Amino acid sequence: MENKPTKGGWSAHRGKFARRMALGRHWKKRWQAEPEFMRASLDRMIAGNRERWKAKEERLRAFAKRLPKTLKSWEFKETLRAELIKAGMVGDPRQVHRVYVALIRKRIAVLQPDGVSWLVAS
Image 1 (cartoon, rainbow, N blue to C red):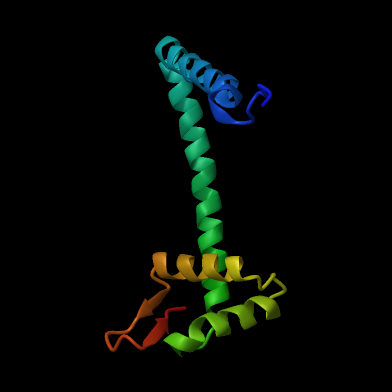
Image 2 (cartoon, rainbow, N blue to C red):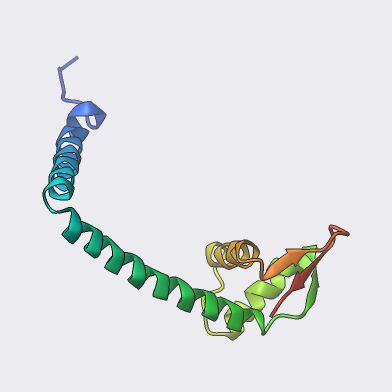
């Protein structure tokens, strides 16, 4: 048997890890040297993200208006997929699941106490 270098392992990740650590040290020094600038920069970034989050939630609520008010559990994802296709969005299962989870997290779709039906608030 020959001694061949192995692919992967620690040696393959050493450079990436070292760069990540160096970047962490860089930002730590920057926060210590210029805290006002870094705080202002962070606030600008958060404000931009907040606008994107609001726009995304508005699009989600507009999409939820296309759904029926109540849906049975077994037809929820199927109806969601059909409406995504009608809206011109891709109806691939991962996207359907992302929209499904977003509707639940934002409390736009709520499971009824009977455990069988969903109420879509639009």
